[in-house]
Each structure stands twice: as C-alpha cells, then as structure tokens.
Amino acid sequence: YLPDNYLCLNEKSEVTQTPGDALAVDGSGKPGSTCVYEDGVTVVNRNLIGDYAHCGDNGQVCNGTFTGAFYSPEYDGRYRPWYLNARDRQRPHWSDPYLYETGYIGMTHLHPVYNPSERGPIFAGVMAVDYKVEDFAHFLEKNYKDSGTMVAIIEDAEPHYLIGLSTGTLASVQYLASDPTQLCPTFVQYGSKDCISERRTIDQIGDSSLQDEAIKQAFHKHKEMGYPEELLFVKISEDVGADSFVSQATAFEPNQGLSNLKWRIITVSPAFEETNDTIMPGDPFFGVVLFLGFVGAVVCSSFFVYLYRKRSVRVIAYGDWRFTCAFVAGCGLLNVATFTLVGPNTDATCLVRMWFFHLLFVTALAPLFIKCWRMYMLTRPTYQRTTISNTQAALYTLPFILLQTTVLLIFTFVDPPKATEVFSTEDGFTRSIVCQANTPAFFHCRNC
Image 1: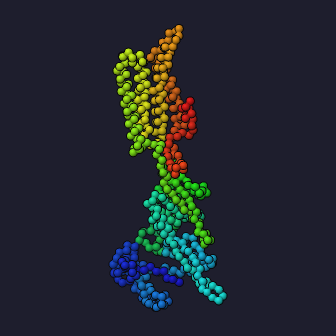
Image 2 (image 1 turned 60 degrees about the vertical axis):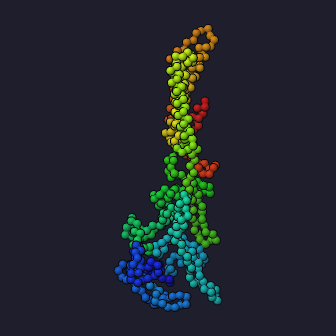
C-alpha cells in the first residue's frame, strides 16, 4: 500500500528534519522549529531503507523516503469502503461523500485498473481521485460571496447533508472527542484522535447568518412544493418588510451512470424592492409633495384669515362668510393631510391616511354643500317665508361627518387597510409594500 505521512516543512515548503529548520507542527507554523513526533519532544531523525525507499523513476534506492515524517496513520486503502466498493462494482463511478481517514470529508472518483493477460484483464487495483467537500465550498465562496447571490449544494437524500455553501459556512465540523459539545481548536491537526469530524445537514445552519437562514428556508420551500422549475419567493419571517429573496432549485446528477449521486443546487438572490408605492426621502416626489402640501396649507390659511377679517364687508357677509371659512379651513387641513403620504407603508400610516383624507374631505365639503342648499332654500319661489339660522345650518353638517366617522370606525375594526406585501413577476421579480384591505368592501362603500 502507499504510506500516507505527515511531513515537516521549512519556510520554502521543502521537507526537512534538520533541527531549527522546520515550521512548528502544532498549527502555529512558527519558523525555526525542530521536527518532532506527536509527543512534542522526540526529534524526528528517519533514514530508513526498505521496500518503500524508492527515489525517482529508475528504481534507485535511497534513505530519504521517510525523512521528516512525524506522523503516519498506517493507512491501507485496500480496506477502505471506497476501494472495496470499486472492486465489487468493477466499473468507474463516484463515491458518496464520506469521512476520510485524515478527518476530511470528501468524495472519490474511482476507476478500476487491470493488468492484461492471455486470459483477459486481471483486476490489479483502483485509481482514485479525491475531492474534499470543502473544495466545493471554496469554489462557491470565491465566485459568489461578494455577488449578492447565495448558492448551496445539498444532498437530495435525507437528512440532506451539505456539500458546499457560498456563505463560508463549513459543510463539516470537528468536535473534541473528550467533549462533543466543544469545537476543536484550530491548531488541532485533521486526523488527530483528539477530534471527531461530523457532517452538517441543511437544518443545522441558519443561526450563524441571514444568508444561511435564507438558503435553509428556500430549500425547504422548494422541497415542500416538489422542486418546481419556476422561481419562488422566500421570506425569512412572516413580518411585513422582512428580508425576501428569490430562489431556484436545480437537480444535479452525474450522467453516464457513473454514480447514484443526486444533489440539489439552491440559488438565492435578494428580491428587488419596488418603491413606486412609497414616497421616501431621496425620491424626486418627496420634496414636491411636501412643497405642494405646505403651499396649499399656507394659501388656504391666508384666505381664511382674509375672509374672517373682512367678514363685515357686504359682499363677503352676503356670501355667508362662516360656511365659506369652514370650507377653506377644511381645504387647508386636506393639504396638511398630504404630509401623511410620505414615508413607508405601515399599518399605522395606512390607517392614518384612510382617516385623514376621507374624514377631512367630508368635513371640508359638508359646509359647502349645506351653504348651497341653504341659499337654494332661501331663494326658491314659495308663498311661505323660509328661515334657516346659522346654528341650524351648522347642525345640518353634522350628519355627514357622523356618517363618515361611523363608516371609518366600522372598517377600522372589521377590515382595516394594512401594509401588505405584493410579489410580482411581470417586470423581473419584485416586492412592494402597499396599503391593502382584505376585501374591496371599503372601496365600493366609498364610491357609493
């Protein structure tokens, strides 16, 4: 078999056992150290000549084959599951991911090797190429970590072990053999008996970052829906305004019958936030709305003050200045109500907008309507003199305001407008937050 050794190296990455020339093997990589065995004391001084002391391609025997080798797991691949499986199957294939003797988790491409003979090919061994699972993670992280898109490769079979994540989260973890609740220190070498390697499942991530949680939620949603081909929207929580993502699941199966591997590649990207339904600071209309609302309120206030001061002038007095002032004041308040249009759509702002606009609209128009009705009643041709005092006319405006208040109270408690998320695929994949009730009842009631 091929011996698998851990070797001491110097700063030039050359194998060495010269005292003071090696990098420390305790994980610190401290230069100027001496190559020692795992006990940390015994100096390595190996100059063996034997069956494996082979140097070069000409079969020359040398004494440097094991130079600098401070640890050997006495590894014999012929008894490993991957070798036995390839020997029994007698055809090229990929292995399932498994725990390497060195502690890494990976997979192996296996190809039987044969010696020719007169009786036909004779099985001679297995050529194996290892791929560490963490190599997949390094590839994904290198290509996607700063792109805003998250990618995960997950085994299709339960319990859905991880193959790789672009977020940097490891697909495997090492625990102390003496205390499984504690992670191994970073200086503990892989393959050490002090640590136990364990694979992670998709359900064992999510607490570390928002990106991992999005990947986990996306995977489970695709699985629940039978892995549809179309894109799906995924939310981290049910709260309105919570981070939302667009995800897609793709099945990956190596072809040509080389393996029974089946993976799911989950791609997750943040959903585009549509802002057409909100007026936020920085929006071109933000300043316009505030300016027009302010100007309208100032103009109406000035007109109100002018009418009140000139109420003794005959033209204004005959024009029923009281109700005219009430109408102008209501219009001023309507202009102030435009300030509620700016800012995000929340449950509170949706309710405030409904009350402000509808109640102030009726409050402004009720005096104008009563004023017109009063003028009609006083000037219509009749044999009986009609008298409507200012107090009576003012009381006639109350039913309009009370009716509108009653309608608003009913819908406030029965079917209030709330901040609602709307997902659309018409122009890309967008999410917008709008004020929306559960039913169109208020819309029809308002138009009656």
